[in-house]
Length: 139
Image (cartoon, rainbow, N blue to C red; front, side, top):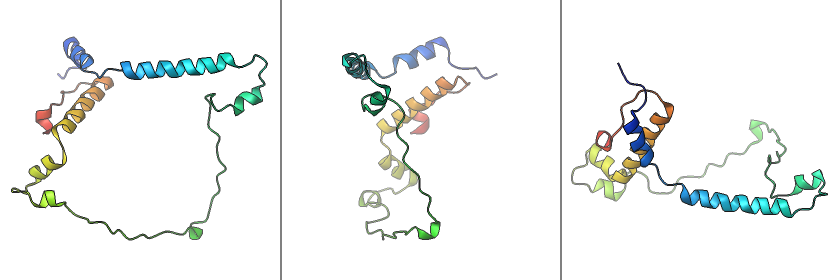
């Protein structure tokens, strides 16, 4: 019977491999301080209409007026594609032009590692039974 989720050691390993959020937390804190300073420095007798016009106050964006047009009145620009198309010289000059060698030219090992990490993270977050993906299985 397939297991549901990860074992505690597996979950801890995934947790310890998560990238650090320290830098993003520090920048978020400094932004929050700026917002708090701006709010606390405003006067107490502020009119609500004035607050709506203040750009620094978060809120819903203004919706622009939508105008519907008949399809017949829309002009389509048919710009010709003038760039070189097809495989690059790097791909065509391979000694062994097999599909797998083309794959290795397009996808680096570091890119595959990111895919593996994000796949396992997503599967862990979903909480369903899964077999962890490895670089070896993809690459």
